[in-house]
Image (cartoon, rainbow, N blue to C red; front, side):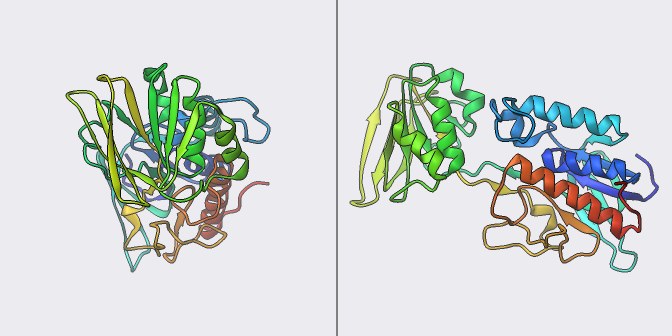
Length: 315
């Protein structure tokens, strides 16, 4: 990696980061996009994407692949590396990004690290992660053909994953702490109309157990505080934890304003309270987290960065 100061470093190679890299390339910025795991972020785990305008009936991997190729065709530099520290020199305004492989310096930074799965906190959750407890239905649904599965969560993602699981599982039980689903009406309707899905309201999972693979699950009725344990043959059921995700904002805490849910506060130009630092995608405070909004965030962030640097994006 070069010692020269980059115009822009983009942290994250999901839809927001890839969109930002496309707009940065079109603005002729000396930019690099850093991704620590896999390009596309969470969307590569999505088997069906049918709400991205102009690209009907695709999947997350294919959409990511198209974005990646478009960015590289425009000259974007994309590197697999993990950013571990972000600092800003108060005198020069230059950012230093310490990574697993070295370091970068940049005049502007776009943080587009996305969000990661949130744990439910029941006994045995960590012990059985990958052995009956999963955080991604599209990744692991195939292992539960004809079996019983539990889905913990009440939002859009949980409801959508529950519907997806009915293609494989014999029965899907949604565990909801509240009195109703928080999912959009159209998604909630699919839940209530699907004969394979039952919803247990005012309920939470307190523990799972077994030898090697799951054999039992303990549920608590939040109305009565009573618990009961359901037992199964070893490996014959699974638990999918689909809760609100945790924004990857750890690097930014000293540089930005964070709301009470852990999301970064920006204005509509994706600017944070630190000059030259922009945030895009799922880690940003906003009302809707979808691929299309992440892509829009990335485009706006890169355009704002280019303008900050005194350059204009070609029309």
